Image (tube, helix red, strand yellow):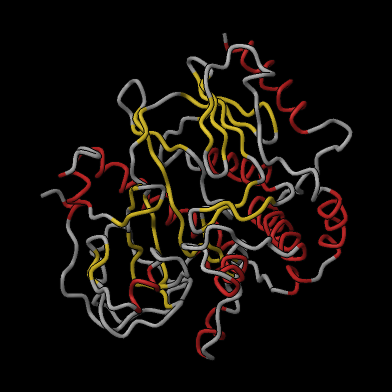
Length: 392
């Protein structure tokens, strides 16, 4: 059995809590180093920017963009139909957030403003599609030293053109903390008594939001439009991936996450967990696809207040969509109810702001609010048609 398919069966029960302390990706799961010298400060910790929740809750920048957010509530990009407006497109697949068009040798991925959770569409969030697309592009560009990706060009704020590849039917979910509120989250399954999750042996005594001593991989696959946890052995045995492809993709996922954590910490944030998707290119190479470290695919916390809040038994200060998930769980059964309540406007606006805040915090660049004179769909159609014609 390859090393990437193995897990440690008898982990120690004393776990680290320091959000800035990380172990090498190659360390066995839950195997702590023998040395007791844990005071060494990493370069990321030295360069860490102190970020406070005040800058998220009340700031001049928030006031500046809230007006634009509220003004765009009725002009979100909920649906696209480029088959009618862009010559040469062959078909469309509607995902939860992205509309994917077959452009012949390429795929056209349009990131909409649809907000998904619990395997359902919950709301439309102003500017969300642009934030996700531009955040992913930023990370795709900065992770080329770890893995190749499928990106060809980005002709529009909401659009990425990508190489076609054979997509692996597995999501590589990487976790650094025991947390979450969905049915497949680590904290949910752990508090329900699960002690071996996706091939990872978990000790007794963990508490919510606790940092794991080593990042773990908890892959999932799809069944009837919901995520199903799966072990590496099951992935290979069922033919979803070869052992070689799984080992390469899992190694890349763990390296991407470690790098993402380091960058996030330098900007005052903790990258808590995320998911990656991979595909196989025409030349046989394993390519990173879909999105990278976005507020949709990832959970982020404020770093400097983490330790104090955990010691007081409080939830970490989060900068992601978790608060919207919790609102729906408080007001309905989002998994079983056929009709969900409308998300309150103030929560929709707050989430739009958090997405922009996270983009600006990570990239250190100002989010460019789109001009409202031209309808979004018209702009996308024009830009995609020009991009495809230049690629032919």
